[in-house]
Image (cartoon, rainbow, N blue to C red; front, side, top):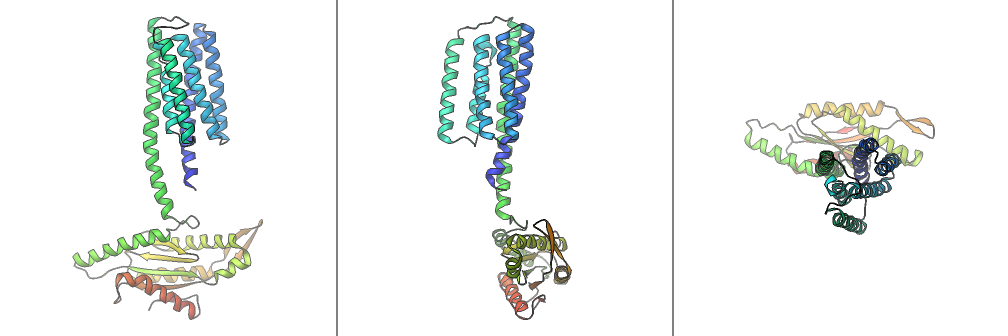
Length: 354
């Protein structure tokens, strides 16, 4: 999934919650206006409620930007209208401030348009303040009821603002983690990618050197297996790249099901995979490698293609190198890769350990 899609899903979830809350607030207020026979305010509340129902429908249709803009207009328009009817002390004007914060935090609105909208909201806020701050209002309410409405509006607006800021903090942290995950994971197979492998290999080598330096044991359980699908070009040529992608995915799933959870599987490039055995002795790694070789050789890969299933048989060649040999840590990948080349040159569908 692309980052923009992730962020749009996050924004949609936030707007859905915000519009649902706004709908509930306007419904409650509409009931109050009906009870007080404030029919003009009742009309405002019903129109706003209908607009938020439409907004929720638009979000389901993934009309994110349109829904956001309608929601902002509805909140600002409804809040200003109710401020003129009940006066500044009703604190409906605080929803205008909340609307400006929503616009500022939105990632869907372009910067120039965002600045324009915020300026318009500020102007409307100022105009409303000028006309209502001196006590102007159309309807007169009991002071206790008016104070209650004002307190309710303040609490709702504060909750919305704090919730949005808290949600942005949490979601931005999640988004950063997702970005890191996407940068490390091969999108096709779900295995780690080459970038992650190179970074992790360097970290693991330093850890192994530290173990050698400070541990009483001189045994290091550290090895690398390079796995390459034999004649993979033929699969792509005969069946197409979509089938080839499906084979790559199933091969990765097969390898992941066999190796230990502590070991690392990476798609190193094309049809080549690398397994980093970080805490597995050579004997255990050899057992896992032989199982990978045999399982893939005997497995019939079932691939969906044009409303039918096709069976494909493939094999892999593997080169392995472990640190229990007289080699440098940083040469292990090179040695394993050379042994893979030997496996390819000497018949394929085999493992070369030395």
